[in-house]
Amino acid sequence: MAIASVYQNDVANYWNAERNPVNLRLGDVSGIYHHHYGIGAVDWSVLDAADDAARDEAIITELHRLENAQARLLLSHLGDIRPEHRLLDAGSGRGGSSIMANSAFGCRVEGVSISQTQVDFANDQAARHNVADRVRFHLKNMLDTGFEAGGFQAIWNNESTMYVVLDDLFAAHSRLLARGGRYVTITGCYNDVYGLPSRAVSTINAHYVCDIHSRSAYFRAMAANRLVPVNVIDLTADTIPYWELRQKSSVTTGIESTFLEAYRTGGFQYLLIAADRI
Ligand code: GPP
Ligand code: MG
Image 1 (cartoon, protein in one colour):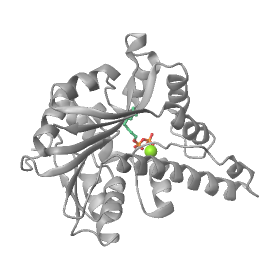
Image 2 (cartoon, rainbow, N blue to C red):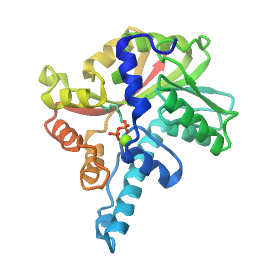
Image 3 (cartoon, protein in one colour):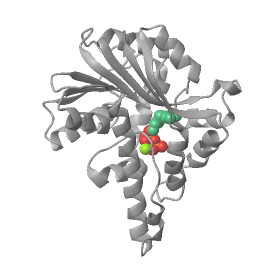
């Protein structure tokens, strides 16, 4: 059973129903569909396009470039991945990161999601990209995949850790990773220098049906599960331009000003954490 709780059923319902243009129109640009945000400097000349339609198209293309850059950064932290390795994309969404990983490394990738709609969409994408024999998406719970212990050289969560209890997640990942394997997450976390999460963080939680963890919770749960950080990168300043451009786009969802407030006030951080499985 992929869905093990009332909460997980709520999450699956959200993703089974989700059709946001900010995800589908961006994915249409290159046929790589993501469920994460973007990083890097914006080319603000996109705002100077000749007419409204051209400007709209240029903004969408630019936002998609930034989300691809985010996925590329994550993949660049997976270590020395070879074609014979197997990777796990935990919370694989519409499959973009997995398909990019196969393209970068030539390896097998398993993606898991508790949304049947996402799994079907992602498998269809793998077929369209002619990689269905190497990249497969499964209706599985990332806390209990049933995959064999030690079978993965690397595992990542691209903005999906806020849907699970971290101790349960890292216990599961630790079991699945080969010794010396790599775990990478890009995530939003609240900054416990300021104590409990701000109202903006609570608004983000309500918007996505998620539960953003504190920064310290990641390191505590990793240390308890044989995952030793090798790289921690604060991407907060790098993701703010994505949100500034998104706020000016035709594909806003209403959460843009909340993210900008959360990041600018310092109470919320966008982090990459890479860890070795010892
Ligand atoms: C973005 O997905 C990620 C999440 C919903 C998880 C929450 C992430 C945090 C960093 C708090 P999406 O691409 O489907 O979101 P949107 O539709 O807003 O683009
Ligand atoms: Mg998105």
